Length: 267
Length: 331
Image (tube, rainbow over all chains, first blue to last red; front, side):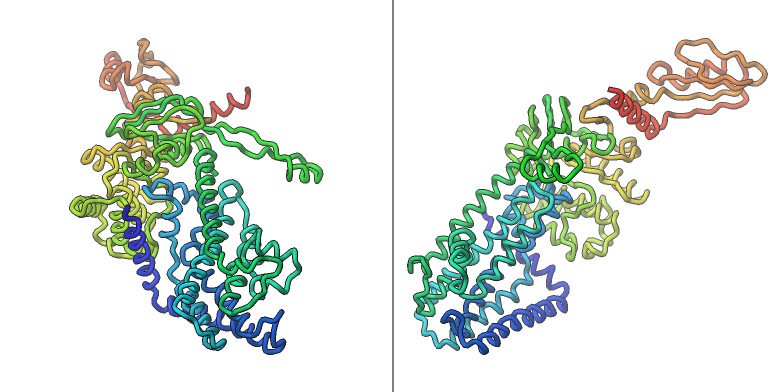
């Protein structure tokens, strides 16, 4: 079906709504830019002091940060508002109304609540990746750029899946903000630094249970030519897209099951 | 158009836990559940073009019923067929043929004029451009929206927003329109506008309209049929006239005679009060017409004054709610 063109109509109307307030749009762009640049610079300052963390240099750690920020922002484009606001929507009954539309509820939510202002995040994330590549004097081939793209897509799927998983309990529970907080923000703080600095238990959690290490730590080793695979196989550097696809597919299945439950129980 | 066979819906709710920290800890791993019946044994049939009003106290099951009809909730048991399909089974297909406005929640983009959302809906419902144009013109005309058609939604008044939402729900020519408390919070003029619009829409397009309300004027001015739901069951289903004669206790006729005070002896005219020259009769309009009643009471004795009091729907319904509640508490 022509979902793609419908989706495009949604995106256009969202951008149009945002640009109604041109000043606010620019201000958001600017303020987000300041926030991200400060965080980015902070890593630089920290690493300037210590030279390296677990053998990872200044721009190498910044590269980790840039990969995380870019994939997070790409996911947040489509997922931030739909899923962090889902509990409120279910409580207010807005979600019921959404179920009277001739569309898949997930697609409808993601298109309707698509957040144009994340454009600035994505732009800064890309810029930081560019800065790291040039500072580290990496010479990337066309294939390497393609693999960078694949890695970002995989990372985006992991981050999007995290958004969806954290929203699903709201089909049953009234309040589940703490799960969302833990999974979406607290846990992600770990991957600001190379996972190799943590005890083995945390490495295992970040690789096998909440596999955020695939967002940046493993694929970064491919680009930086590192051999820092902890207790795991070097093959892991290529697996980001696969991990992302599996997680995302799981999220979709669980979501559909949640919706089905919702139909029969209500809120 | 709508067939409901023996439909029930129950929810699982957490049982309120006992006092004390032990019970609190216990509830973490062993939650006790109760089954709460929202509605049970619903049976009704609505034909195309009917205007039906659901009334009932809060929590009686009105919204649950409308949600099941519109495909949001699946019945626990029983069968619902609307437009020839089961709404909960074939939700997306059903959605193409219904329009829904639930309360004051807006389906429109806050920062944009309604026009933009309308165009989006045109794509979503795949409405033919000519039909779309015609329907937009029809709505703008009937709902008198020319003055604010291009104003961002956030600048509209509550009544204007409600009208815009109604229009948005009707662009794809739905066969059935579901409204959950469409006039709540609106001023008298806005209410009248919306009621008139619903009548005209129904006359023009034969749209079946199902609405829930607490405002009895909605029922009196719009609905031909009234369904009263209390405690999950339909306790009345029929016309407004018949409702009044069944529950309202009939029309009151207060008569002041000149000199004589002997009340009339007619089984159809019941004497409910009698002081001095004043007599109050009560009668059912289905038994005896108003004209006949007046001519009867004035035939033998001269009247000084005569007053007519129709049963007040609001009061009647209030009485029914209280009576049912008391009966439930006794059980």
